[in-house]
Image (tube, rainbow, N blue to C red; front, side, top):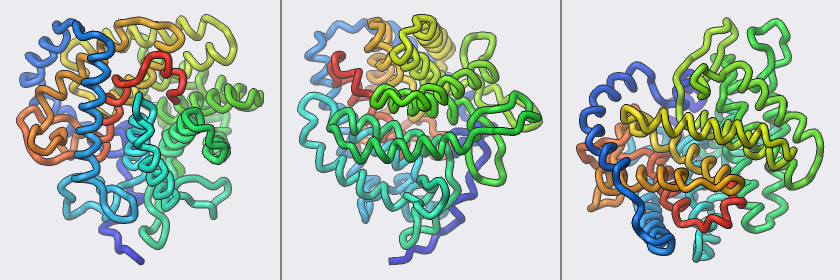
Length: 418
């Protein structure tokens, strides 16, 4: 079956926008939502966690389940794939790009890892099977295209961060189930990531993994190096092959040296003119604190653990001020929160779960459409709508499945996250 695309899948917006967020529109949207969010966030930060751990986990499980049902009802489509948005817009492709699809996969894996999650094993199998429609084994090195390969699509440019998210999901699947094929595919992805390393010593801040293979961008991003380091470290911890650790250290050091801001957080990317895009997205902080935590696990060097804790503290302080959690799309916060729990597995701190719980409660109470179970979202900015609606992105619905699913996990199982 051949599907005609409405637009070319490799015509992605510039980096620094989370693939599909327009910075100018985001700033406008930010100003519009701040007044609505201010009271909400004040309530969120003031509410103590009084429920017992078991009760909180039960609530999270129910919320994750309801959010997943809405995901499947409104965004799932044929061939085991998903729509990019609900309702589908005229300009949208018939199916989602691989980046949103990967986050639906992560959401399903998160549900499967929670207590009683065995019933989602078949859903995980379905996600992994459909994922192969994005795999391009004809390139050297192979990897996942940004859009479906023929016959369902025309393929698309490879994005290194897209592949890293998938690689990390495959490692988590391996950790949860022992699936050796998943680990082997994660290794293939890491080889692709290494292929994306900048080797031109004349470039400003030489080194770093590029964001994409697309000819219209030569940016090197925190989000193409932080998760690349995490993937290498997860593979090292599974295999003890030294090349994984060597490359992971290199990627982490590059991002830490070239994109760390004076406030201890990380800017988005640097281009080949040396211009730094200084937006501080929450997922950039997550991948760097996660990589630092894994470096501590891999080396025993407590300097890395101290750095991870410092990033976490700076990020929580920064995003808890001035309503900033809600200036971030949930897709970014979900990645930050998962990495926060990866850190919590090595250095427990009740503040970590508390901030996740507060955000999750606010979204459930103030954003969720009680009739449909979706989380109304501005489709252009990716930010939640606090005024209701029936529209949602696959990325945001999947993010909330992840967040509620994470809150259902037992702390002793956080070591299985990737």
